Amino acid sequence: MTPTQSYSNTKATLAMAKASFRSIIRSPSAVVFSLAFPLIFILVFGFIGGGGIKVDVGLAAGSDTINPVYQGLKKSGVVNFVTEQSAREMEADLTKGRMDAILDIRKNAGVPPYTVNIKYTKASIKNGMFLKSTLDNMMVALNAVPNQTPRMARLRETTVEGRIYRTIDFILPGQLGFSLLSSGVFGTAFVFLGLRVTLVIKRFFATPVKRFSIVLGEAIARIVFGLIGSLFIILIGHFLFNFTLVHGFITVLNMLVLSTLGLIVFMGFGFVVSGIAKNESSVPPIANIITMPQFLLSGTFFSISAFPAWLQPISRALPLTYLNDAMRKVAFEGAGLGDVGHQLLILLAWGIGVYAIAVKVFKWE
Amino acid sequence: MTAPIITVKGLVKKYDDFTAVDNISFEVLNGEIFGLLGPNGAGKTTTLEIMETLRDKTSGSVTIHGLDLDKDPGAIKHIIGVQLQAAGYYPNLNLSELIELFSGLYGVDIKPLDLLEKVALTDKAKAKYKDLSGGQKQRFSIATTLINQPRIIFLDEPTTGLDPQARRNLWDLILGIRAAGTTIVLTTHYMDEAEVLCDRVAFIDAGRVIGIDTPDQFIDNLVASGFERKKQVKQANLEDVFINLTGKEWRES
Image 1 (cartoon, helix red, strand yellow):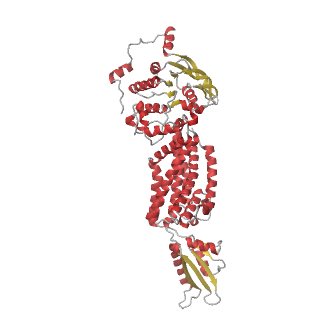
Image 2 (cartoon, rainbow over the protein chains, first blue to last red):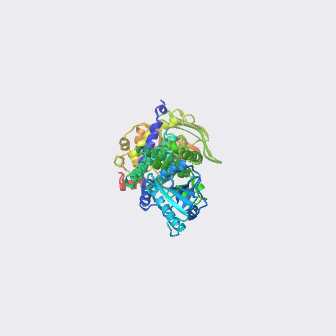
């Protein structure tokens, strides 16, 4: 009789997953970190709205740049000029609200010497209004001669149609990403460290269960829990705060696929932390070293473009940045998973790196 | 009762320059309760954990129910039950759910309540392990060793820290499991316990076996060598007084 032949690794893995899932939903910290925290932040930011505004303005090719209007806007510090894009890309970004306005200043033969063409978007009304008032103030100052024709420049305004980009459309994907990060890192680290120090894993090893069944079972449970949490956050955001889901159900599905990928990468960090930490009290400091910088620098609360230039390369090195970025593209711009291939590739690279370290430092006993 | 179910030959376990187990050999017979006795650090737990497939050995051979530990540790896991000293259980699960988990890990189908009934814990089916009393915890640990209907179970200090009533209760449980045909290997620091439970015992000190025999034979040999207790033994001891005064039935709180 060889009982090994009838032994089912699938059954063992599923038993592990079921036990782990039951344990997670009964653990107050898992529920608080994965659901309550993101929801509180979404509520707070959903009602307050964003702080320091930085307006992204595309400068049309061939636009004059030695005129006082352009120089004034540049000095104001509220405008971030985009010059590297083609006219088509700019138009597309404007419609999506990724760009707040397109500026095109032409030199005239006669009076006034300049015509300022500015194109706003309904996709970014708030930033557009902010730019308009800045521009209006400046025009009044420049044309400050009480006659009919403007002395310096004439302003021509148009507005393109676009989706309304609400604060929630920025905040929710960031919170979702951060919820996945903390659940992946803290949850995984605590569980595996706990199982190791209380000898639960040692007792498991006295059964025929394979190591990969234990890891896979835990991962399945955490991913299922993470997806339920993500769905909950997305639906609350959509129905209570008008979070934009461009293609509805398909968009939700794409976001859940992204959530899964993100969670798998972040769980890798959790395995690393559980391997490094000596006991339960050393988990939070180590885990915070991983989560805090991403919490602050990965565009969770503020757009990365609002950060000083020296900080931006750091932001662009962090995995959460790319998850957040991909989430926003999928949710608000209706991008498919193929359109965020660049972000997915960087997440994948992080995943490979992190799991390579995890395999080295992870301890079973 | 005469065929050995476990054969350990020349077992050695070294940690760097420390030798925890130094050339140990013994046999455990089918259906007996075999005790490993000795002071702390003698190598009892190490020996047990090597047999349980949880620890690598440095050299020597171990055969369990005809299976070579080196060649087929996976198959050995199917026919043994293990109770570890101070092992915890998966957090936030109740006893039924823990048994369900272990059933999945062993690949067997059992009803949690049937198993809990064997160790008189049916009324605790919905309780968490951490909320059990010391005796209940040990009974539950022993229940988890029976999930895969093993040929042999290993118990590492099953009664340490229990009060006299809980200890006697556990003895009854262990004797019942043996009566059902399971071979038992256990360690203990209580000699009265070894005397009551074990058919044969091995004394281990500093990683070596210094004697294997029945408890009776060990005592007879010692008396025959002219040993006398300093104080004449009375018909009863203080533990008998304790049980007599407080009753044999076990209190669960």
